[in-house]
Length: 209
Image (cartoon, rainbow, N blue to C red; front, side, top):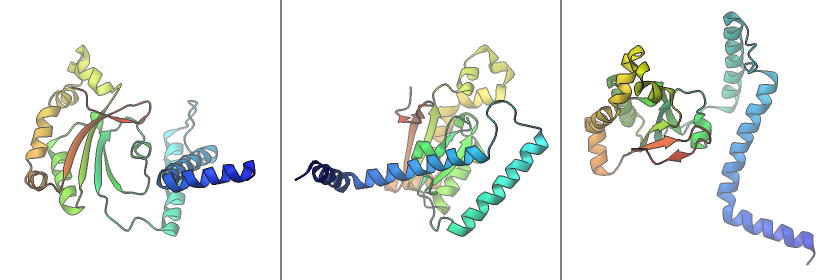
């Protein structure tokens, strides 16, 4: 058996064992490559010359029109998501990278500091009922500006946001006590878990105390 055939056989064996991971990671790589290609011809200038607000809005509308055409051609998701992830609005957090998926399998809720409020809690409960969600992930992230402000002298300049961060545990318990959430948790048909996102890598880590 030649070296080439041996190498091919090894590759086939590895593909047979790890084919799901290979295809999943490969698909994610293609999505990232697509974003890089789009960035060459469109998108916002990262060098500081971003133009006037009217020009930026025009670019947003143009990109939306083109992207929506692609969505119409390819067809949107024909299913409801099974997972909701609540995460901060920090632009460094890429939800597609964090969940490794761009196929709309997730409800993604972006909030300042990913802190819950009464209306958001009700919205999550409604999503559990209407979308039949099975998993809700509540996240914080490293190097969070809101966390820093809430626990510093600057908190007085942002009293509402700072109080929301300080009441995070209280609001989490309120979420768990909502009727549709509590009943599904007791029945074992829903999981609610907390994680911390590594802002640099997007990795989901155990929550910090």
